[in-house]
Length: 155
Image (cartoon, rainbow, N blue to C red; front, side):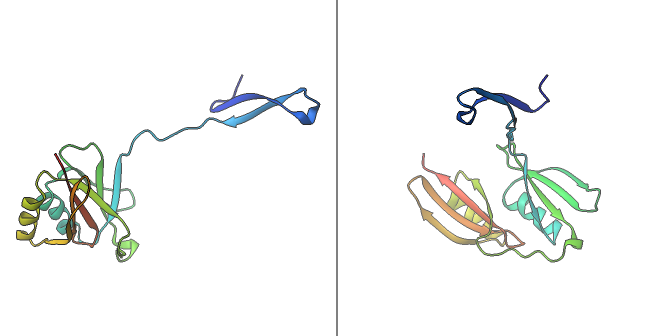
């Protein structure tokens, strides 16, 4: 009987004069099945959540405290399954977001209208809009300095 998670393979070895070698065991390759969420740690939880909800239009799915004391808020875009986890855990020290380190990308129906609404709420575009072969994209900065990419695909 094979141990769970392994595959047995008979190996033909020239080292044994062409005779069949013994059984070798290789671990079964187990792959991830889907992306569940992405986590960003922030210092000002409520300001950040307000940005994601009021500027980007994300929905708050759940909120709780982790066993170690992190305040966690999970958000999602209307047409996505994947969640964004916003974490506030002051014991980890200050949040330092380096330039061009990471970003979230969201599709928008009308980039110009979105940019106008975001600017009216205090979040102007930080880069763009820029035309590409597939559409137009731009960036805004979330309260903690994380970049948000906005993409309007061509019809």
